[in-house]
Image 1 (cartoon, rainbow, N blue to C red):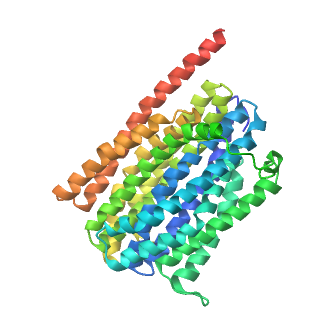
Image 2: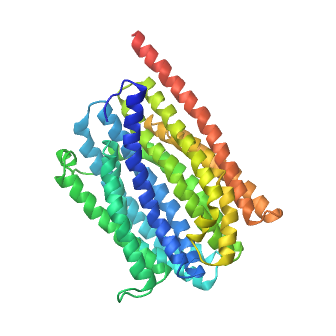
Image 3: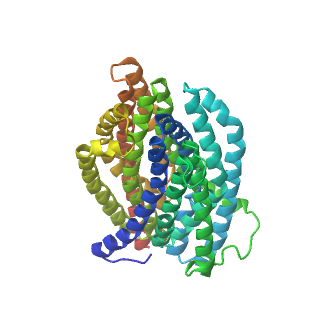
Length: 456
């Protein structure tokens, strides 16, 4: 990151951050896409089982992994304030925290997972696939969380191209092992959807090995001396990370878990409905990688400027990021409308699932504009280290408004399964409105603070 002095320079620097982050996010989500889509070509039961397993795992990882995202604004502020010597210590403390979180997931999951699946109205085969998919995937949880920390470190330095390249070489590894283990090719056992779990775990280990090599052997990362020494645990540093990270993690958890909760509630419908819903939500989530990437790029840019107390520049980056996200939302909406049949065909050959997926994709169009506003604002607020508002917005908008509206429409009107999607749309829109007002308030406060400092 470097200081910029014009709109053109800011646009170019934000795009330089954004494009690699976008490719990285699409690549990471493409792994989940490959799990679901390739499992769907094994059978509808495998698709439904992996869908259930994925919708249990994704909010757990994104929520608890979101805690570790606190490292990005922490490192960005150190850079903006010209305190690079403090970065390695913060990173190592985040690594310790990541390992602790990973062990906690494994311990709690070993007791909770059977009970969670037992409460769901699933076909026995679908339940078994979901359970063993998650058991297989759990073999890669520890390396995934360590990789997540090191990725935050790399991105915060503005070197987002590095994580992009790691993801690009990891994706074919994931697809290859999916092919081998789902369908039983070249002497490997045909494990169906469960094979996707093993393939994902192998990919997580691969990512960790690569990122360890990069951060310890390649400049500028090796300059920071990560893993050359192991400082003792610091409760003070953990408190700093958790003060920022817990609200981020809870906000992400409440946002992603609402989609998981809807999928779990969909278990009251038949396997065709579950499979179609998951196919549509999977592609809609893939499109969400665009505003999410804008959000992550804004956290880096705004954090850098806020750390240097250049609040006008931070505001300009925020406006620029929202404009990019809204513009792309127009394009993705048109893609969904025009090519919904072709998109549905990527997930299934089953005629009933295909037809229902097309209908769900029409509702996904309405997600695009709320996400294009809410996600970039969340990223900007994290750059300001203002994280509590996003947490409250997610809790109230998604769980206080979206889920109740969806439940009523799905169970007490003719909308049925589509009612949950209407509820999601309502919650996303409410969250976008709330966050917009919060951003305006934070920026006004920062503007007044800068004016006061200049007056002195």
